[in-house]
Length: 216
Length: 216
DNA sequence: TACATTACTGACCAGTCAGTCAGTAATTAT
DNA sequence: ATAATTACTGACTGACTGGTCAGTAATGTA
Image (cartoon, rainbow over all chains, first blue to last red; front, side, top):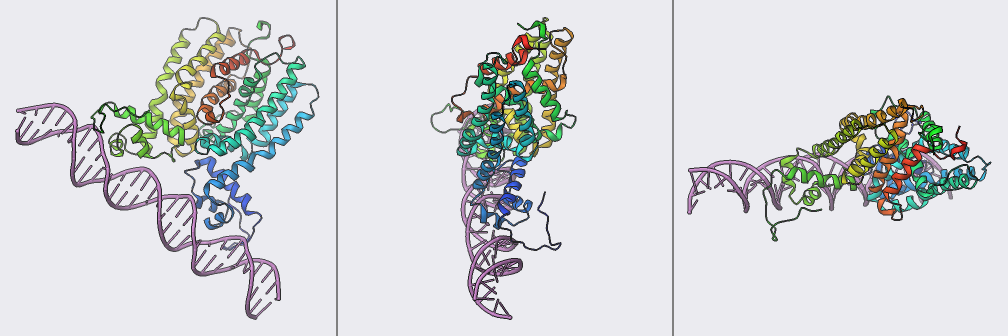
């Protein structure tokens, strides 16, 4: 993970453009692993292959670094969701499935998957960041799924339901899958793979537990 | 939340028996709200109405306090689940519903509901505690739901499924509901109430999204 | 009342870490 | 080459906090 050095001997490099992204990536890794308060800026800097002083050239404080990590992390991904929705071909179930699988591919399976855990852990300590995340990520993600559900209901593919609540119920297993990787992941080696989990989630979501003939 | 004082003037009380429970309750509240590292022991002690020195009479270190909070917090509740399972009357859907609702009543809605968030946030920093929690709480909780699913399958009420994976998918919305209260809860005032959420979860779980006649 | 016991206190200490800044070396300009 | 610029360094500091312990007061005992 540590920035590979081009010189074999310890030597300075001047790479003004690359530093902020490298520092934010290192900070995300450590914040997710240890929590914000337990992460030392010396460690973040070392992980990015620079000294602590350099970190302060690009971020004014530990809190500003945290904000930057959250704000630039997730936003670009949501655009992809909007695009997928615009290509709706009439099968609401397939669209829902595609969205949930793509989310895993772009977020859950990458290091961005740590952001939900980080944000949940630290929301109480950074109300402004939490509000930003809530307005720009949570609400937008919910909006995406809500639109799919409404498409499914108006086209008579999905039954009537409390749409807003259902959105949260649908997102919960996706989020837990990502969160789990960064918390109990190491304890839970026998766990089935994410693909199986997502398949089970989507199948259950669409069809439920009950045997078909008994459904009212 | 602060321990009410019997004397109106600041005065000492000797209550050896009550202290540990009061200190653990105060610690749970603050650990959940702020995270382990960001919680000061002076604040925990003040919340429990004692001085920091008193805290050290009952707990050897901050980490021991953390362990105590986790270990004695959840365990008693799981016994209730076992008991409910033993009174199975033949309706697997109803038993599953009863278990999930009761979990919310006993854990999610009480201050114990903070423990999942706390454990998820700190699992990486306390591997031994995480292992304890995993073995004694996670596995036991999973086992409960798994038994219900198997009862439902053998009695032909539930369709065939990947039982172990389904268990995790079922538990995820329950956990997220509890976790949310202690993270984005304050940001999310317009949110629907837990009862609606649980009803929606259970209904979706049993019946799925698709309209009945279209199910294969 | 006098003494013994012990729950409790809070000032203190030692270690840690966010944030600083004078100095260094890589790069560019002349 | 020499100078000017600036990305970068790491020793330092001040504030903060986990943990200690000598002392205090509440309670029990005779």
